[in-house]
Image 1: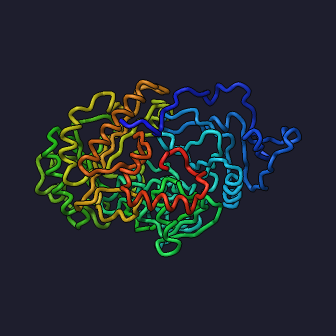
Image 2: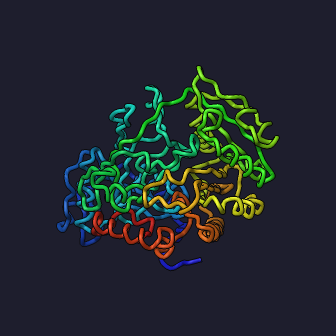
Image 3: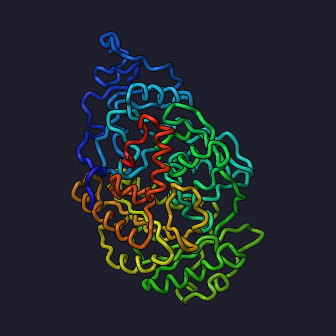
Length: 505
């Protein structure tokens, strides 16, 4: 396992409610280059070298409690990267002003809409965190697209869109995620479609504040290099402040079938049969293997078809024709559309209430496998999974995605085959962390699995916790794409202040 330059877990920090001297929100008024620290109003008189922050519509705070709330992410692996200040922007102008200010003063900047990364990607040690959730307006929703702020949650957009008979075409399994955040890593639709999967490919236009502090509108035809740099670009070149998201008609209901398999070859025979007629009138809209609470069988077929009440789906015998008796025996589950797409949210909310979900250590693994190698990979790996790999709160996913639907160059997928296969083993610890020994073993496991994935032509989906150094990133992107990415970084973030947590450059 490579170690030079890669992210290392930091497993000691002051807990959020155990900080001595925690006070109410403390507003920042300037930065002192002599001490490389932010200055409050009470300290300004004794800091003659202070460079005043520009007037803001929102808040810039540096009290211990606010900083501690931003010194860890959902993974609870990389800990203690405490920012010196946190911006709660009241406008896009605030973001523009503060990025310019940080550039002038050599201050690193991280942005998040809920610190949902799992290996410190959205953290910064000693710099500024921009908490984008305070910009969360849905400006409009229409059949030709929804205009939304980057801090809007997918859940809120889905709810608002369904009221007017629309929905985003690609929906993540868990929807309480900021739109800017998922677009920054690419965004995988994981519950409604095998043919429309990449959220980054369902964006018409972005508004971005670059690392130079410029406010730029970009699309596939306007400022296209910035647009491509932002789609799955991990926030390296700018901050997404607004997006125009594709919309499609929303169905009224979803009927789905679940069936556990212990015979992996039979599962792949059945799912490939179903995949051959996906989106046809007599087929499903989405087929996958999903285990939502530990393994029930090595794999578990999930096959869903969306419909309206005036046009019910075919019978199970028609939908499952050509498949094994295991598939035919699956019982239907019928749900209203919103209940269906929010199922993972419901499960996670239950875990949050009963299992201390937010405190669990989450060494997640996500890969995108080539069609030619997926079955062998699953047959070799899944029988070896242990109770530490798959705990009662672990999600395991194997889902085919139409490879031609991924057109953004920084969203890396295998380079051959009609289908690419998302394989996620979202391991969670049994008990809340930190747990240095568990995290270290799981990170080593993930790197080993990533090595196996690359040996068959697979790629990493960067939502996960695989410790990378620069050489690993170059291997992930390939020499040509990495060089292009590095050029975009230099152009749009000339002083390299943005998103240091990923360690790409």
